[in-house]
Length: 351
Image (cartoon, rainbow, N blue to C red; front, side, top):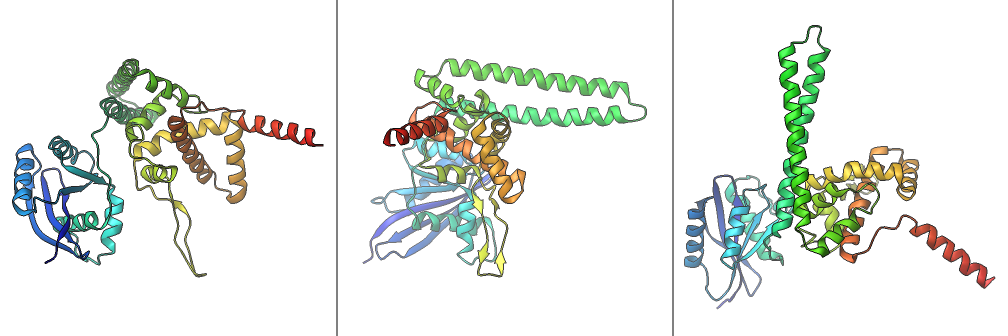
């Protein structure tokens, strides 16, 4: 008789419902999907889903709950399961969609999506999701709110510009738009104040880490807290490659033989807030740091595309934030100059 070695519940999360599929892996490594159902994306639905899983699964083997990171709709379920001491894994949608293509499924529905997630969970060794640090979670909420306010203010400024460019601008409309811009600016200032007050309550070690990150050229306080908030303090990031993939700054290229050679470009399949947060710091670093300026010039000379070179600087800055946070060091602008001078000194001594 075959023995069950692994059990997974694949969950396709929508705003109002959870489409789930229960699967198991036997000791001969053959997977089986044997149960599917739909539950409401509410606290009551979570409890009903948990009871259903207990009823159908083998109590001797733990069940891993696997779901996609779908905006914020999956968070309540993840928090509930974490509170129930269940094994939870949250996967980037790009990974699931890439895996689903290998299954040769022609019709994509909620049911086939949860089946793909269940099979993915059965075949892969997944890490446990942990509840985000409370401080990092608040920083993420505040920085995202600020980003939305800035976007709204930009729209209002564009409207004002268009209104003033007309032959006979309507003064009442102009005044209302100006009030909107002032309102958004005041709210942004409130958020900045909240962020500063929140950091003041942080442990000393975290304050020092943020200060170290801000020593990098072009990186300020808002960039530092955005990166830490979006990555939960790099909790599940193991290396630089993982980080660039999570941010969607990894390079995607299609090449086959001599006939197919697509342009290399970033995947953009990742956290858009991280990518946005690194844009202005990269431009500042190019202008004010000789090291980044040299890298930018070299890349532009190589392929002639300034935007491509700027993206490479974004990626390097993000990797540097990760290294400095993990190693607890401070960025040294003069590092390479010191290294060159020390090498020259060693060569002179040898001569």
